[in-house]
Length: 97
Image (cartoon, rainbow, N blue to C red; front, side):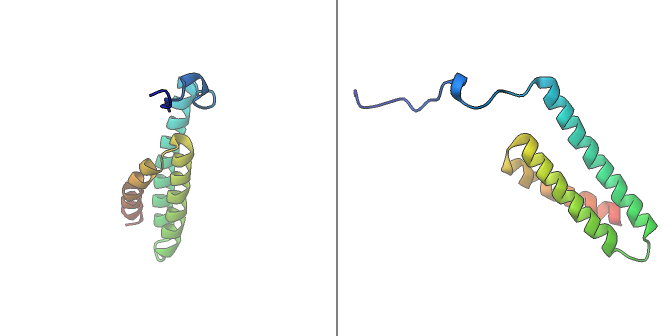
């Protein structure tokens, strides 16, 4: 049993410095505000371009991808970004219609 080593990494060397809690709250609030503004902007663009549905859809898809990248950078969790993709597309479809 002398050859068995623990693979547990001590918390002091686990990673970089932790982000402060209020900074994390501000970043999350900024991401939520970006999501709301994206939906409102896509809806407004859909009303301005009544004859063309392509323009708000393309802009909405780009904003959804931007939201996904921002979420990936904020939380560093790909699974959370994948789970947020379907509701983001539902919001996009609802705002275009």
